[in-house]
Image 1 (cartoon, each protein chain N blue to C red):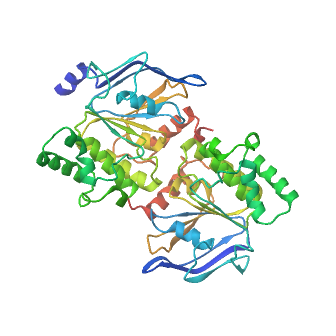
Image 2: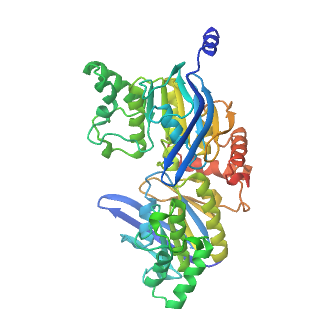
Image 3: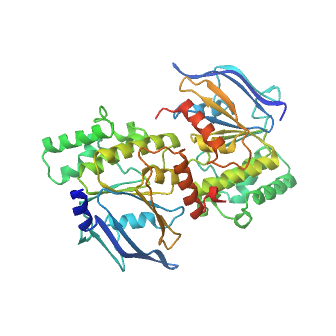
Length: 246
Length: 261
């Protein structure tokens, strides 16, 4: 946790006259788990889309390992709120797909696919198609697909927003386990303050549009964290006060 | 005091006796509910809570008269429920608004099909539209509204039918965490102002504790009443108050959510 993995400087994005991201600067350390929280509709998704180069930016720069971000060179993985599995591919093929388009050789693809299926406990379902799986299994497939590529940077946009609470808790714990094993650098967006505090090393609090970073809070609560502990509640109150609009 | 006493003596608003349900499907019989016995008081805010797919919605549909109980019976104010009863209103998870009607059109729909005069139903609909905080949006169509606003319309529409009992089936399941907090505060305010018997289904423990006078915990399939918790915490409640968190922890342990582990 020493060197900067991602450096964002003066990132600005407009949609015609609407200024969405207003000169955002921050950096993410290698292996860091960063959570982004902000008021509803503040432009968090636009922000991730700009980082991943799905959207072009108007000004500013984003570098990974000191070089301008380039999805052709850097290995970015993106997990969305919707379950973005390919319906015509089974579990195994869905996970292998990410490796295939990155151009890995056959042996590596087979090896890493098996490894990833094991990490999310889907061994029994390798030949199942998405329509035969539950919501949490679908999200597991997507997570396995992302981790299989050993991404430089994993972007997650509210991945558990639509799940039942108990599934959400299970997947959060599973994600933490994967992160601890792989030490992947993660930027995780959520509306849920409790989730941000449960998961992160650090929390970036965003403002309303035009979005800037209001503050950065380091989160060194001991893991596994307990939502009813006093330190947890204190931090939760602090973040809530920073973004509360409701 | 006198009023309270007379209320206690009267029949409960809703009484469930040995309510059970088995679905017959190709693979065999699936027992969803097993012998649920429950009295719900007038103007009580009751939450049905269960972590999994444990038949909460089925139970709600039965109270709405959309599913029959076999065996077992449901009565409302002492009278056996037979099919749909206008005393019961429903707010759906998917909002289920008519996309071709405006906010006003949606809210006044119930009274309109019952033949209430235009002037009267407009007045009433306007009252509930104002109550849910949508003043100024009367002529908007659902597609022009956010998810939280659509749920407000659903709530106003349910109230506009003068129900004694309002059933809410995970109404905020699709909203983001922050909008959800706002809507929970809103529902509580509306309920405080316009008391009705509310039966609210959720699998979100925070939401259950924030809203309920009493929480009924349902077990996994077939659902039975595992335990019930009266929630005596003063309103409006804080989700990070020690007594709130303590009860949350206790219930989470019971239904095996993370905090209990």
